[in-house]
Length: 159
Image 1 (cartoon, rainbow, N blue to C red):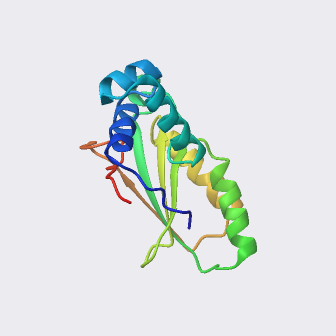
Image 2: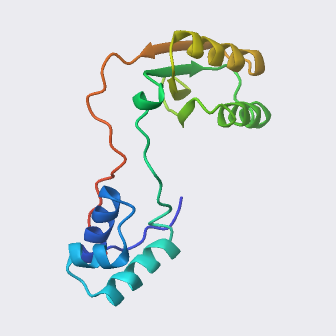
């Protein structure tokens, strides 16, 4: 587990502004959060160096690029050894349609979130996965409607 980095109110305001718009200049962030440009730049640099601010990315509207179908894939396996896990992780990480990948507790071992064009594209991804990895059970759920989707995390100050 990584080290928790202390954040104060000013750090939280900076992070909130950047989560809303990662393209903001230091001058624009400093104006939004009511800090001098130098103070804001130093704080942003510290947040980057400590890994709190890990990267700035462009968010693409999946529907506008034809990826209308969101599929949640629950996976159970009877394999729980390091070699199997390394192969499984490698296969999943090489699948561009998998946008999220989790190891879970409980009845389901792994959860994948895919964004694909249609059922045919999902079926191709499914066949690719099961041809390369031994799985006990694969169950898929198709999202009917997206009710909330955000990349912003609820950041709070702490010492």
